[in-house]
Length: 313
Image (cartoon, rainbow, N blue to C red; front, top):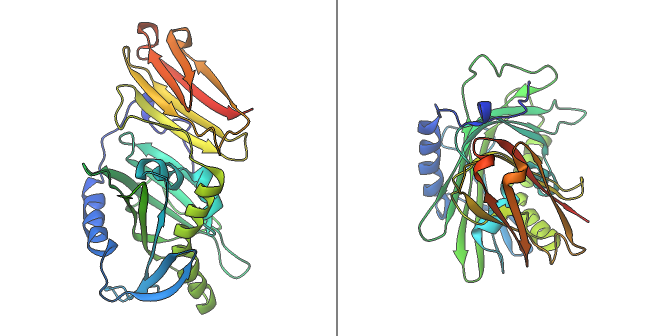
């Protein structure tokens, strides 16, 4: 699978051909986030609840759900934990790798992801679309699902292409923290031993307590405070192993100003470095203050590609 260096073609977003898919998935997810009908308890961990439900299409693998709460972390802050693949490998026991293939907006994109295999089972890979919806009350919904092959995302040798019927997050304000729900309905396709199927059912909803634990231990990933900015966000990534590197690649818009929030208490307790690279960086002004990097984009950076990088000292 060819992974593009810049999923926003030539720095700009591309038309989204999959809005009908994410709209349908979100409708189905909202019907199940708080539903009690048909859900059976799998287990609990650190106050989080894991459940399963027989799929209406008769799939051998049930729909699974994890529910939990985190104190002192707002929905938009926790959202940074669940959307970065550089964090996901620490809380999703089945995740191997993931990439954005095409970007349709700041938060809507086509993706390619790989789930780990074993000596009995080939790794599974998925090609899908993801989108995020922000509600006025501060709630955040993430909707994901498989998309048809467009001729550019065919089978990959050594991997079995799975079907992600739906997956998604509900992150709602609760007191000074967040209430979190994660639902997944997946068909890995091909032949899989019963024991492996049981393991998938157990492991997948554990993503909720695992993500909560990791967030409480490692802190919040840097993120733009404003929900919308004028510059085009081409790439936003995080690598925990590579000096806790946060990379924000932009196509600048003159006059734009925004803040990148930085967790100095847990993520960067020994301090952090801020770097700017690329075109027109002499016209990109960065000012640091307590827990924040303020960016101001000048005329000379208008329409230019540049990056803001934050790493631990």
